[in-house]
Image 1 (cartoon, rainbow, N blue to C red):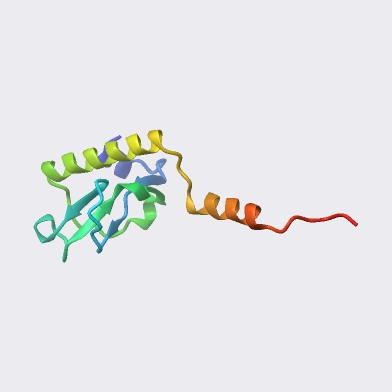
Image 2: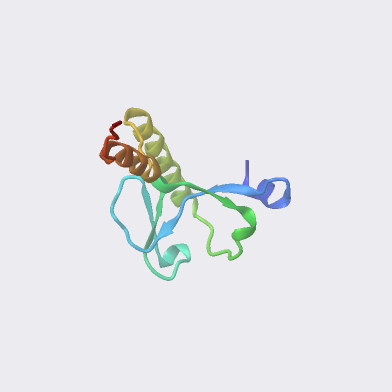
Length: 110
């Protein structure tokens, strides 16, 4: 779906977003952006942390990606999909639940 389709249709209430962080880690799944891209300082789109957001929460337009940055974004997203297929993914919530069950004292019946 295109961005314009999503913007025009109120039936679409959520979108998948890749967050932008001001710290660049140098990950293969990051796309580095800077002042040339319309940002105030160097930042990175992190494709490993995709999230679902309500469209209504996206209120401030910042920039449009150039064709080169869009290609970089597509490459980073493809790398994310490949890495998730080849390794098991454990989200913070599930890893905490697993540790909690594993570390919980065993109950004894008297």
